[in-house]
Amino acid sequence: MVIRCMRDEDGMATVWMLGLATITMVLVALVTDGARVLSAVSETGDTARAAARAGALAVDPATRAMNPSLAAGEARDVVAARQMTPGPIVVATDGTSISVTVETTVDLPLLALLGVRSRTVSASATSDLLQGVSSP
Image (cartoon, rainbow, N blue to C red; front, side):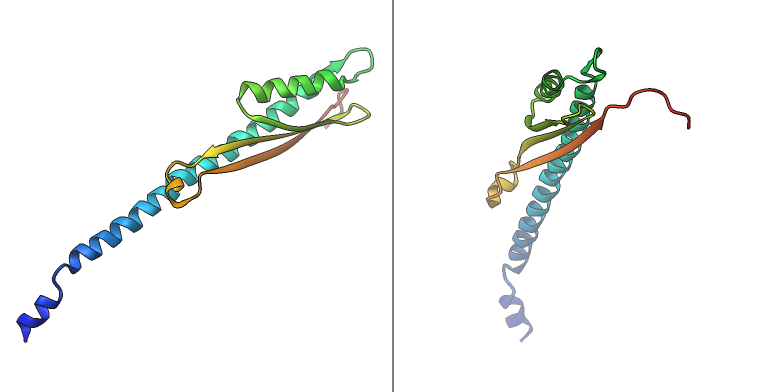
């Protein structure tokens, strides 16, 4: 009877190891490609904020307001320098603020094996033009 039970379990260790190896590979893919997405989220946010700051520095000295075309151009230059896609760039009609949206697509090489090839990440930032010095 003991010999019969042992024969029924032939190959079970192989099945268990294949199952564990598959689960481990899926977890490695999730962690690796998830880290790529989180890095892209951070980088996209940084780019949006930098582009908004650069646009806010495009001030016309005569009117002390943002020059809309120059501000949008400066913001696009920052986004292009970081190899991302600029979204809508909106300069307020009174020239006191600029809003920038940035998008990028992250390739997911390991999750592509499971059918998830890429992920698009976007971020927005607004910068206001401040004038003068105020007391704290």
